[in-house]
Length: 109
Image (cartoon, rainbow, N blue to C red; front, side, top):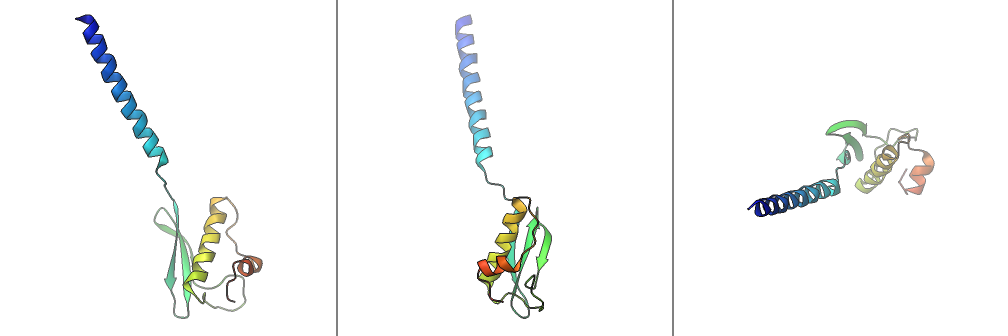
């Protein structure tokens, strides 16, 4: 009788432990993106926002670095620049965009 109780306890313990390990593994694999980039339409083109935990931290409605107050010509240009800024933030770099960055991304100035 004691052997059966120990066996039952051990089997229940193993099943619960396996379930717990599986649950931890699944939770650790879930991708949690804390920075999110979005684009928006402006009067003269496109802009982008970078959000952290649903709060906007960067809102860029004009092309940075150039002397004119001009929005991005296409939605794709705004997306490419937003993704560059997001990558810089994720790497703990300054989110500033240089003219060289815009040329490398082939942004229409």
